[in-house]
Amino acid sequence: MAARTHTVTNQAPPLVEYDVFTADRALVEGVARHADPLLLGEIREELSGLGRSAGSAQVQEWAELADTHTPRLRTHDRFGNRVDEVEFHPSWHRLLGKGVAAGLTDAWTRPAGHLRRAAGFLIWSQAEAGNGCPLSMTHAAVPALRADPALAAVWEPLLTSRIYEQGLRPAGEKAGVLFGMGMTEKQGGSDVRANTTEATALAAEGEYTLTGHKWFCSAPMSDGFLVLARAAGGLTCFLVPRVLPDGSRNAFALQRLKDKLGNRSNASGEVEFDGTWARRVGEEGRGVRTIIEMVAATRLDCVLGSAALMRQAVARATHHCAHREAFGGRLIDKPLMRNVLADLALESEAATVLALRLAAAWDEGGPRERALLRLAVPAAKFWVTKRCTPVTAEALECLGGNGYVEESGMPRLLRESPVNSIWEGSGNVQSLDVLRALQREPEAVAAFLEEVGAARGADHRLDTAIKELLTELADLEGIEARARRVVERMALVLQGSLLVRHAPAEVADAFCASRLGRDWGSAFGTLPRGLHLAALVERARPEV
Image (cartoon, rainbow, N blue to C red):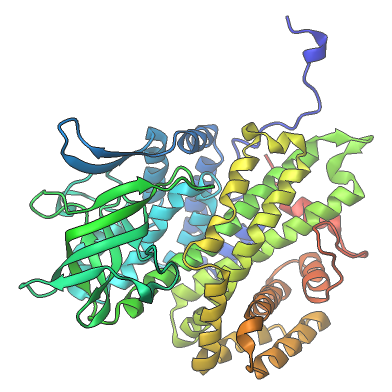
């Protein structure tokens, strides 16, 4: 019998056995807004099934195990032969298999494919974000490979397959494959044009050998990789398979795995190429242009991944505060805590709405939508990923000491939160990319202004923010030094425009008052008076 002093009271029940999709009102409404009404029932059923899985006790246990039992590098077998394999906990394979089966690598072959995949990626990343890396790169490899129709015909059906087969075998013997990416090198970092890996042409058309290294190779147990190397004609994109068609291992020496802050269930390695066989993708000297299609798709996944982390952090914070009592009442009913939760909920909803709009633009695919994506993706990637860490840290604080211990799951979210702001280009890289588009692609500027202008006249604070942004954009003198300021304003104006058009009035009003009207402090929980904070918090709280 437990001592009376050990009786547990006033603790929130676990946030488990719930539908991650249907519990997220902003996500449900966003999918309905962008989906073809004829497909909506099918899409909702699909996402709800994934949502129930993501919220289940079983999947939450797998996620914890995959994060706790991190990947292990095995360079040689017992006889001394080089094998360069990464061993994962079985839970990692279960999570990855469910992600593949849910279509998270298959946006390209079905109606509304990007929208439904984006929503699914946002749902599944809330269970465990680490397996999002191979899912994202496998999905994103498709448009890059389409630069070579012959390669695409072979690999695309395998990349978009719903079957996950672990283990290294020739791709032709598998029902589905995963892809990784290798661009970054020690001396260059984000400056991929400083890469020194050399490509030597072989006699057969399009075949080369590579010699060099990659400082970050994501998901090194994948079946194939897109990498950049320097050929005679300049920096070029190549496909590097792990296993050659005859069953022999390609030269792919894993030197070590990275010991990372977060994203610990996923392996990232340093790899050496020494006579590594590769197949050219696209033309020599056009490597960056070829692989940029992959980069654009993975950047959108960075936005989705950060939106997922923020949503899960807010869900846990509001759930905890709805059950925890202090100072004579529930935390969620205390005015100050309500302000904090409402502020966090705003940030989360704005991220979700923006991410879904970009996914829908990919589905529509016309010239105007592609032009919008050219500016909106790097701007969104800059801002949404930057907001993830402070949101997650504040949500953790809402749980107090309960949130600071590993068993709560909040530390895992916090450790994961910076990764998307670094992966696929840091904040400065995104800002410089936006500047290039502003200076060289007038059609992208026109599409962006048309998008934010669709809400003109609906809120005076949004109108003022648009005018201020136009003033910033009219003065390109010395703009690099203030690029972050410009890109931040672009992202906020775009979020404000979407919320004014599509969100409930209390959400749009609070966002415009704080983010655009500047009646806001430097910390969360500083929303101004007169807003309907209780409605914002109730909207964000998951019902279990």
